[in-house]
Length: 92
Image 1 (cartoon, one colour):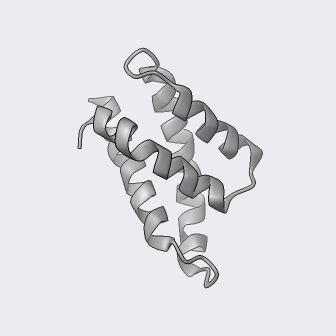
Image 2 (cartoon, rainbow, N blue to C red):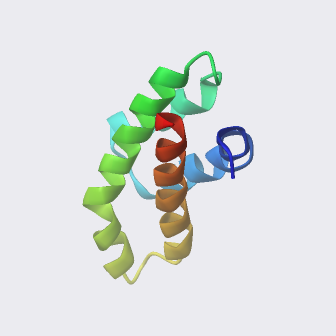
């Protein structure tokens, strides 16, 4: 996938997956803001928000994977991977 495809096709799902799991205000704010960004105009800020969401996932993914009450673990793993893919594409 390219940047535009991830942003247009996957970003809503990524942010909804995160919002369904967390009540952390900063993370909720980041997901709200990233949806409103305009690529390529806001490329730098999109990159910053993607980094913050990846950082959040890196500290939470093991808890998500080990929590027996979370039924959509595969959605979190997909979201985490897509964010890392997006970050890599934004760097190029």
